Length: 282
Image 1 (cartoon, rainbow, N blue to C red):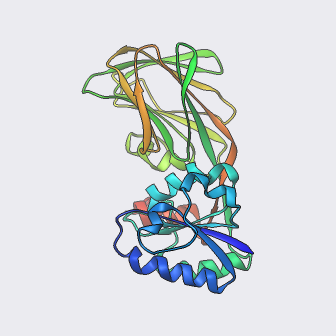
Image 2: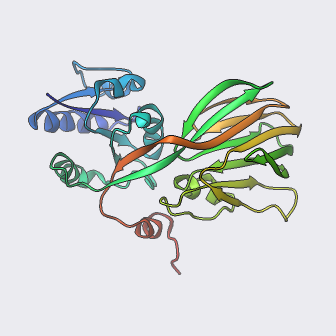
C-alpha cells in the first residue's frame, strides 16, 4: 500500500472543498492517506494522526495546504524524517509555498511519476540553556529570534565556535538559515542568501550602534547568544513556538544534521524574488 499524508492550515474555509478533492485524487491513485487533526476539521476521514506522529507512518510525501506558516510548522514536525513536502500556497505571499492551487494536480501527477524537482533546505538546531542545562530544543527552517518583550534595549554577548565575537546592544538578534534570509532578517536589513548557500546569518534588530552590521558565517559554526543586560526577552522559533529568556540564559544555534526536502515547480530563486518581493524591479 502506497502512503501519502496531508496537513492543512486551520480556519481556512476554502479547504472544505479542497481537502475532499485531494483525498479522492490520492485514493484514486492507490494511496492510503493520513491526515492531521487540523485537516480532519474539513472532512471526516478514517486515518487521523497527530502531526508530530505523521512521519511514523512513512508517507512517500506530504501535501501541505496553507501558506508559508503551515509549511514552517510541517517542516518542524516532519522534517527530521526527510519526507518530501509538497507545499501549496493558499496564503497571501507564499514565498516558500510556491505551488499555486491551479498547479496542484499537475504537480501531484509529476510527484507520483517521480518527475517533480526536489530541493533540500538546511535547518537550524536551536537550544536554550539555563545555568548550563538545556531547557528547550527546537528546529527552525527560517530563523530563531531573541527579542525584548518590552521597548527596551538588550545587551547580547555573541560567541562563534566558543570564541567571543562581539557584543550587541539592540532590540534583538535574528539567527537565520539561508531560507530565512528572505523573512524577518530581510526586513531588519539583512542580505538575501540563495537557499543553496551553506551558511548561517546573524542580523541585529535596531542596533544602538551604526557599526553593527549583519554577519554571515560558515554553516559549521556554533553560535551562542547570551543575554547579559537590559530587559528579559523571548525566544521565537519560526515565529510560531518559543519561550521566555532571562538574564544569563544562552541560546545556541547550529546547522541541524538533517534537511527539509521540498517538492517544487521548476522556478528559479530569482524568479520567485521578482514575483513575490518585486525584487530588482524599477
